[in-house]
Image (cartoon, rainbow, N blue to C red; front, top):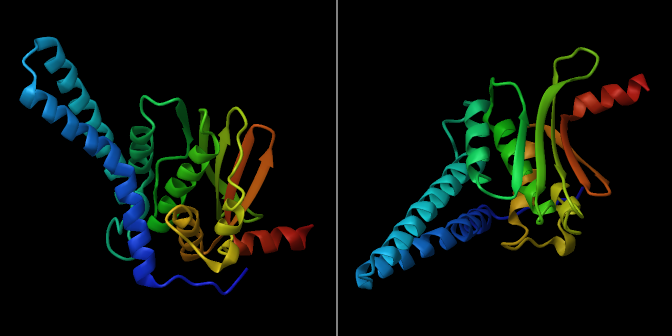
Length: 226
């Protein structure tokens, strides 16, 4: 672990850039569809434009709802979030895409940073399977006492793998001590994990990637027991 820290204003700017990147494409498609409607008289072309606008608006809405929960405040400090809402926005984000979601987490009220962590891990998992596949989200107890939470998000698909810089970013130790707009999301995930007092661990196998989050005390207890 390094002592690297990102200025708060830089963090905010990079996250805003990430959100804008996510919504600019569907918003641009809406604009294009409106331009077609303005100039086109053919009924069939107008129907195509209406369909484009509808689908693009749904996509933009889904991405904004996801980003609000994954990156936003989502309530006051110390607030809890219904994991059912997290499942809803995750399914909305990947609707009609080649990536499927298997949500195996119980519906409970969970501290917001843990929910944000799950959603950010979903984004990292999706990036690991650009050709499509299955993202699986599970939560459960860990440790001898059974009261320590463990989060697990996996990605399975053809040639599934993380970008080479992602593990170091998840560890909060970016290469060359620099973070740009392309790297901000996994680095932000490391900050969320730290805020949730959790440690991230990456496991990779052929066509498979798993990222687990657990409390440091849980791992220490397991090491002692071993």
